[in-house]
Amino acid sequence: MKKLVEKHPLAIRWFHWVNFPVLMLMIWSGLWIYWANDIYRIGWGSTTLYKFFPQSFYAATHLDHKLAQGMAWHFMLMWVFFINGLLYVGYTLVSGEWRYLLPNRHSFREAIEVTLHDLGLRKTAPLVQKYNGAQRIAYTAVVIMGIGSLLTGLAIYKPTQFGWLTQTLGGYEAARVQHFLLTVGYVLFFVVHVAQVGRAGWNNFRSMVAGFEIEDVPAAGVTGSMLAQRDPDAKA
Ligand code: HEM
Image (cartoon, rainbow, N blue to C red):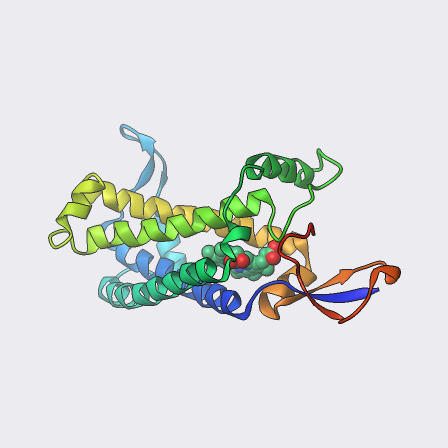
Protein backbone atom coordinates (compact mmCIF):
# COMPACT_ATOMS: atom_id res chain seq x y z
CA MET A 1 0.00 0.00 0.00
CA LYS A 2 1.13 3.55 -0.76
CA LYS A 3 1.59 6.39 1.69
CA LEU A 4 2.30 10.09 1.15
CA VAL A 5 5.23 11.21 3.25
CA GLU A 6 6.13 14.87 3.61
CA LYS A 7 9.82 15.28 2.74
CA HIS A 8 10.87 18.86 1.93
CA PRO A 9 9.28 21.92 3.63
CA LEU A 10 7.91 24.59 1.29
CA ALA A 11 10.57 27.12 2.35
CA ILE A 12 13.44 24.73 1.47
CA ARG A 13 11.89 24.08 -1.95
CA TRP A 14 11.59 27.81 -2.65
CA PHE A 15 15.18 28.50 -1.58
CA HIS A 16 16.41 25.55 -3.65
CA TRP A 17 14.58 26.49 -6.85
CA VAL A 18 15.41 30.19 -6.56
CA ASN A 19 19.08 29.33 -6.00
CA PHE A 20 19.40 27.08 -9.05
CA PRO A 21 18.65 29.64 -11.84
CA VAL A 22 20.35 32.46 -9.92
CA LEU A 23 23.54 30.41 -9.58
CA MET A 24 23.40 29.47 -13.26
CA LEU A 25 23.01 33.15 -14.23
CA MET A 26 25.82 34.13 -11.86
CA ILE A 27 28.11 31.63 -13.58
CA TRP A 28 26.99 32.84 -17.00
CA SER A 29 27.48 36.52 -16.21
CA GLY A 30 30.76 35.62 -14.48
CA LEU A 31 31.95 34.15 -17.77
CA TRP A 32 31.08 37.44 -19.52
CA ILE A 33 33.42 39.14 -17.04
CA TYR A 34 36.10 36.44 -17.10
CA TRP A 35 36.42 36.67 -20.89
CA ALA A 36 37.95 40.16 -20.56
CA ASN A 37 41.00 38.72 -18.77
CA ASP A 38 40.94 34.96 -19.40
CA ILE A 39 44.24 33.95 -17.86
CA TYR A 40 43.58 30.55 -16.32
CA ARG A 41 44.88 27.33 -17.79
CA ILE A 42 45.88 23.83 -16.78
CA GLY A 43 49.57 23.29 -17.55
CA TRP A 44 53.12 24.05 -16.46
CA GLY A 45 55.80 26.40 -17.83
CA SER A 46 55.00 27.06 -21.45
CA THR A 47 53.00 23.80 -21.78
CA THR A 48 49.22 24.28 -21.73
CA LEU A 49 46.98 21.22 -21.49
CA TYR A 50 43.76 23.22 -21.35
CA LYS A 51 43.04 26.93 -21.57
CA PHE A 52 39.99 28.43 -19.86
CA PHE A 53 38.59 28.93 -22.44
CA PRO A 54 39.53 28.06 -26.01
CA GLN A 55 38.37 30.36 -28.82
CA SER A 56 35.94 27.66 -30.00
CA PHE A 57 34.13 27.91 -26.66
CA TYR A 58 33.62 31.67 -27.02
CA ALA A 59 32.56 31.21 -30.63
CA ALA A 60 29.97 28.59 -29.68
CA THR A 61 28.57 30.45 -26.64
CA HIS A 62 28.79 34.12 -27.80
CA LEU A 63 29.79 35.19 -24.31
CA ASP A 64 32.67 37.40 -25.46
CA HIS A 65 32.68 41.24 -25.52
CA LYS A 66 30.01 41.54 -22.80
CA LEU A 67 32.12 42.76 -19.87
CA ALA A 68 29.91 45.69 -18.83
CA GLN A 69 26.72 43.66 -19.19
CA GLY A 70 28.31 40.81 -17.22
CA MET A 71 29.30 43.12 -14.36
CA ALA A 72 25.84 44.66 -14.20
CA TRP A 73 24.12 41.26 -14.00
CA HIS A 74 26.71 39.71 -11.68
CA PHE A 75 26.58 42.54 -9.14
CA MET A 76 22.79 42.61 -9.15
CA LEU A 77 22.33 38.81 -8.88
CA MET A 78 24.88 38.52 -6.09
CA TRP A 79 22.31 40.21 -3.82
CA VAL A 80 19.65 37.63 -4.69
CA PHE A 81 22.18 34.81 -4.18
CA PHE A 82 23.27 36.30 -0.85
CA ILE A 83 19.77 37.01 0.52
CA ASN A 84 18.38 33.65 -0.63
CA GLY A 85 21.39 31.83 0.87
CA LEU A 86 21.10 33.74 4.14
CA LEU A 87 17.38 32.93 4.41
CA TYR A 88 18.07 29.26 3.57
CA VAL A 89 20.77 28.88 6.22
CA GLY A 90 18.65 30.84 8.74
CA TYR A 91 15.63 28.64 8.02
CA THR A 92 17.58 25.38 8.38
CA LEU A 93 18.89 26.58 11.75
CA VAL A 94 15.52 27.74 13.09
CA SER A 95 13.49 24.79 11.75
CA GLY A 96 15.99 22.13 12.82
CA GLU A 97 16.46 20.96 9.19
CA TRP A 98 20.20 21.36 9.77
CA ARG A 99 20.05 18.02 11.62
CA TYR A 100 19.48 16.24 8.29
CA LEU A 101 22.10 18.29 6.46
CA LEU A 102 25.20 18.47 8.64
CA PRO A 103 27.55 15.48 8.41
CA ASN A 104 27.70 13.41 11.61
CA ARG A 105 30.16 10.81 12.85
CA HIS A 106 28.62 8.16 10.55
CA SER A 107 28.65 10.30 7.40
CA PHE A 108 32.10 9.47 6.03
CA ARG A 109 31.62 5.71 6.45
CA GLU A 110 28.11 6.04 4.99
CA ALA A 111 29.43 8.08 2.05
CA ILE A 112 31.90 5.28 1.20
CA GLU A 113 29.11 2.67 1.50
CA VAL A 114 26.81 4.73 -0.72
CA THR A 115 29.56 5.21 -3.32
CA LEU A 116 30.36 1.47 -3.34
CA HIS A 117 26.64 0.73 -3.66
CA ASP A 118 26.22 3.21 -6.51
CA LEU A 119 29.21 1.69 -8.30
CA GLY A 120 27.61 -1.75 -7.97
CA LEU A 121 30.38 -2.96 -5.61
CA ARG A 122 28.11 -3.31 -2.56
CA LYS A 123 24.74 -5.02 -2.51
CA THR A 124 22.85 -3.08 0.14
CA ALA A 125 22.56 0.67 0.54
CA PRO A 126 23.05 1.91 4.12
CA LEU A 127 19.93 2.74 6.14
CA VAL A 128 19.76 6.52 6.39
CA GLN A 129 17.52 9.33 7.58
CA LYS A 130 16.46 11.99 5.04
CA TYR A 131 19.94 12.27 3.46
CA ASN A 132 22.78 9.78 3.28
CA GLY A 133 26.35 10.61 4.34
CA ALA A 134 27.45 11.52 0.81
CA GLN A 135 24.51 13.94 0.47
CA ARG A 136 25.17 15.50 3.88
CA ILE A 137 28.80 16.11 2.97
CA ALA A 138 27.95 17.46 -0.50
CA TYR A 139 25.08 19.73 0.66
CA THR A 140 27.10 21.15 3.55
CA ALA A 141 30.10 21.64 1.26
CA VAL A 142 28.02 23.53 -1.30
CA VAL A 143 26.74 25.91 1.40
CA ILE A 144 30.33 26.54 2.57
CA MET A 145 31.28 27.09 -1.08
CA GLY A 146 28.49 29.68 -1.33
CA ILE A 147 29.95 31.55 1.65
CA GLY A 148 33.39 31.23 0.01
CA SER A 149 32.09 32.69 -3.25
CA LEU A 150 30.59 35.66 -1.43
CA LEU A 151 33.78 36.37 0.49
CA THR A 152 36.18 35.91 -2.43
CA GLY A 153 33.77 37.87 -4.65
CA LEU A 154 33.69 40.74 -2.17
CA ALA A 155 37.50 40.66 -1.97
CA ILE A 156 37.88 41.17 -5.74
CA TYR A 157 34.83 43.45 -6.12
CA LYS A 158 36.00 46.01 -3.53
CA PRO A 159 39.69 45.22 -2.91
CA THR A 160 40.30 48.67 -1.42
CA GLN A 161 37.28 48.95 0.88
CA PHE A 162 37.65 45.28 1.91
CA GLY A 163 41.45 45.34 1.79
CA TRP A 164 41.64 43.38 5.04
CA LEU A 165 39.59 40.57 3.45
CA THR A 166 41.59 40.61 0.22
CA GLN A 167 44.83 40.42 2.21
CA THR A 168 43.48 37.65 4.44
CA LEU A 169 42.69 35.60 1.33
CA GLY A 170 46.25 36.05 0.07
CA GLY A 171 45.84 39.13 -2.12
CA TYR A 172 43.77 40.05 -5.18
CA GLU A 173 45.17 37.39 -7.54
CA ALA A 174 44.79 34.60 -4.97
CA ALA A 175 41.20 35.64 -4.18
CA ARG A 176 40.41 35.70 -7.90
CA VAL A 177 41.79 32.15 -8.36
CA GLN A 178 39.73 30.97 -5.36
CA HIS A 179 36.60 32.61 -6.82
CA PHE A 180 37.20 30.84 -10.13
CA LEU A 181 37.94 27.45 -8.52
CA LEU A 182 34.73 27.65 -6.47
CA THR A 183 32.84 28.13 -9.72
CA VAL A 184 34.50 25.02 -11.16
CA GLY A 185 33.39 23.30 -7.94
CA TYR A 186 29.72 24.28 -8.56
CA VAL A 187 29.88 22.87 -12.05
CA LEU A 188 31.25 19.55 -10.71
CA PHE A 189 28.65 19.54 -7.91
CA PHE A 190 25.92 20.24 -10.45
CA VAL A 191 26.96 17.38 -12.77
CA VAL A 192 27.05 14.81 -9.91
CA HIS A 193 23.91 16.20 -8.21
CA VAL A 194 21.78 16.14 -11.36
CA ALA A 195 23.09 12.66 -12.28
CA GLN A 196 22.18 11.38 -8.79
CA VAL A 197 18.75 13.03 -8.95
CA GLY A 198 18.17 11.37 -12.34
CA ARG A 199 19.30 8.06 -10.90
CA ALA A 200 17.06 8.38 -7.83
CA GLY A 201 14.02 8.81 -10.06
CA TRP A 202 10.79 10.73 -10.38
CA ASN A 203 9.50 10.14 -6.84
CA ASN A 204 12.61 11.80 -5.40
CA PHE A 205 12.62 14.69 -7.91
CA ARG A 206 8.93 15.38 -7.33
CA SER A 207 9.59 15.60 -3.58
CA MET A 208 11.73 18.70 -4.21
CA VAL A 209 8.87 20.21 -6.25
CA ALA A 210 5.69 19.11 -4.48
CA GLY A 211 7.17 18.38 -1.05
CA PHE A 212 6.05 14.77 -0.64
CA GLU A 213 7.25 11.33 -1.58
CA ILE A 214 5.17 8.22 -2.14
CA GLU A 215 6.36 5.32 0.00
CA ASP A 216 5.39 1.67 -0.05
CA VAL A 217 4.28 0.42 3.36
CA PRO A 218 3.02 -3.02 4.39
CA ALA A 219 -0.81 -2.83 4.50
CA ALA A 220 -0.99 -4.28 8.04
CA GLY A 221 1.21 -1.50 9.43
CA VAL A 222 -0.98 1.37 8.26
CA THR A 223 -3.16 3.18 10.75
CA GLY A 224 -4.47 6.72 11.03
CA SER A 225 -3.86 9.53 8.56
CA MET A 226 -2.71 8.78 5.02
CA LEU A 227 -0.67 11.93 5.04
CA ALA A 228 2.03 11.28 7.59
CA GLN A 229 4.67 13.68 8.76
CA ARG A 230 8.09 12.00 8.60
CA ASP A 231 9.41 11.17 12.04
CA PRO A 232 12.73 13.03 12.25
CA ASP A 233 14.32 10.17 14.16
CA ALA A 234 12.90 7.32 12.11
CA LYS A 235 15.09 5.33 9.75
CA ALA A 236 13.94 5.74 6.14
C1 HEM B 1 23.82 24.06 -8.87
C2 HEM B 1 22.55 24.15 -8.52
C3 HEM B 1 22.03 23.36 -7.36
C4 HEM B 1 22.42 23.40 -6.05
C5 HEM B 1 23.51 24.28 -5.45
C6 HEM B 1 21.61 22.43 -5.32
C7 HEM B 1 21.71 22.19 -3.96
C8 HEM B 1 20.90 21.33 -3.25
C9 HEM B 1 20.88 21.21 -1.82
C10 HEM B 1 21.77 22.03 -0.86
C11 HEM B 1 19.93 20.30 -1.49
C12 HEM B 1 19.49 19.91 -0.09
C13 HEM B 1 18.33 20.86 0.26
C14 HEM B 1 17.82 20.74 1.68
O1 HEM B 1 17.16 19.73 2.02
O2 HEM B 1 18.04 21.67 2.47
C15 HEM B 1 19.37 19.79 -2.73
C16 HEM B 1 18.41 18.81 -2.83
C17 HEM B 1 17.84 18.39 -4.02
N1 HEM B 1 18.10 18.90 -5.27
FE1 HEM B 1 19.44 20.35 -5.74
N2 HEM B 1 20.75 21.83 -6.20
C18 HEM B 1 20.98 22.36 -7.46
C19 HEM B 1 20.33 22.04 -8.63
C20 HEM B 1 19.37 21.04 -8.75
C21 HEM B 1 18.74 20.63 -9.98
C22 HEM B 1 19.01 21.24 -11.36
C23 HEM B 1 17.88 19.63 -9.67
C24 HEM B 1 16.96 18.84 -10.58
C25 HEM B 1 17.37 18.25 -11.67
C26 HEM B 1 17.95 19.41 -8.24
C27 HEM B 1 17.22 18.49 -7.54
C28 HEM B 1 17.29 18.26 -6.19
C29 HEM B 1 16.50 17.25 -5.48
C30 HEM B 1 15.46 16.32 -6.11
C31 HEM B 1 16.86 17.34 -4.14
C32 HEM B 1 16.34 16.44 -3.01
C33 HEM B 1 17.22 15.20 -2.94
C34 HEM B 1 16.65 14.16 -2.00
O3 HEM B 1 15.58 14.35 -1.43
O4 HEM B 1 17.32 13.11 -1.87
N3 HEM B 1 18.87 20.27 -7.72
N4 HEM B 1 19.97 20.45 -3.78
